[in-house]
Length: 126
Ligand code: SF4
Ligand code: SF4
Image (cartoon, rainbow, N blue to C red; front, side):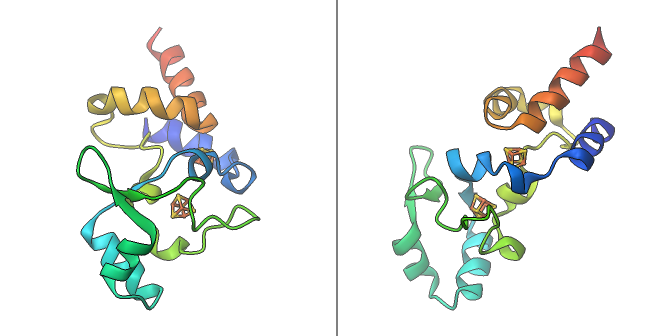
């Protein structure tokens, strides 16, 4: 999976896509919130009140999609400090990839790179 992931992302320019940032939001861990609010020079609680809400799984998520931090040229305003979930998306190089089948099913619908990686994986399995 690591090789398939690397091969796909060598030829994928996420700046031509940004579909993940446009259609789904990451969850924000406590560490993400502290790091990003510091970067934005906001108190963590002000950051939460301004941008986040709690979802049905009791996770902090964005109040809106497309993501507030997505800029018109598809770059990310907080790229260096972005949530861990964004940095790891679409999770196709996870060591325990086989344990996230449900998540991958959702991600292939969003991410053309994840779709291609899973297609290639299926070809290899055949
Ligand atoms: S949806 Fe996939 S290909 Fe598109 S920007 Fe996100 S990670 Fe990159
Ligand atoms: S924080 Fe950045 S990388 Fe994450 S969804 Fe928003 S714009 Fe995309």
